[in-house]
Image 1 (cartoon, rainbow, N blue to C red):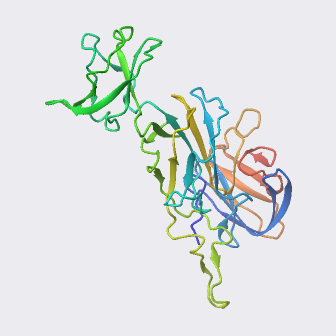
Image 2 (cartoon, rainbow, N blue to C red):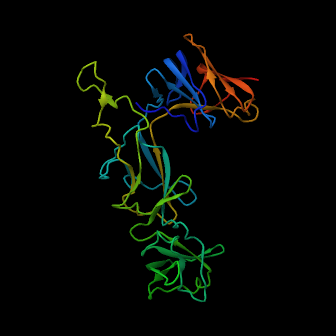
Image 3 (cartoon, one colour):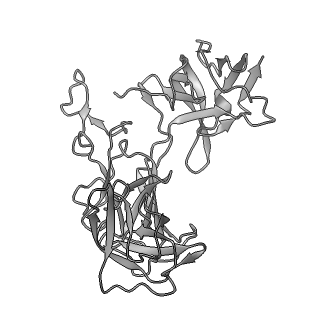
Length: 360
């Protein structure tokens, strides 16, 4: 059994309703009505309301799909590129990276960008002095991810030098907190780029990709070939096949099926197998990881015109205890009112208005 957590924030109330009728929307958009032996209603301080199956002490999983990932190749403007991406990006919990294995109930939803020759964090638009054209320096803390084989790109206002300057070595500057990006003595700086006053360091060499999360936070630059980025996992949901009866004895509880669901689950690994032949600087693999788990959560629609604008902070919740109760009632301190929730009119994971009636 796993704890039943709210969708965010802290729980602010709880009600248990026997034999409640609940509208269910399936993956294909079709609808049916389920009879829940004991329905749990739990509002939380972030405004979300969670419904769960209290009779078997678990969250709902309304999705018929399993854990999966998808990969799309986009250009620097995030427009799709029609280039074959099959087998170039691996998303798996197989620690050998040889096969795609995802253990449902442990895979977190996520979105990642893997940018080819992406700018390294803290090393964009750095100043340089044209009078010392071969001097490229940065603070050591900002340059921690830079290495030999990376690329210096000279820049100006709306101007980018067409010739890259490969970094031969990254060397500490004595008596300072800075490092110097040395370029080969034989490397020439084009005359039309010599006056440019800024430079950016981009990933190159045998690790030319930079990994960012959906918010743009830098995660890693070692994701190519034998290297991969690891996302920690844990079981947050137990699928129906998680437990099994190992002894046919009704007096003993079922046990976890370790052959299908290892304990603890291995981390999720993200890797670029190789550089695609047609990938250009700034192109990126957009990687979507989908847990395959869809809990029953919703919020009031607080947009103008719904009369629910102040229903943002829910409090205690009550419901009739006779069978076939179709409504719950949630007190809202933020609105100085009560919200009636109609179970037969709800749609999960959306802001609701039609199934909600305010009383003030």
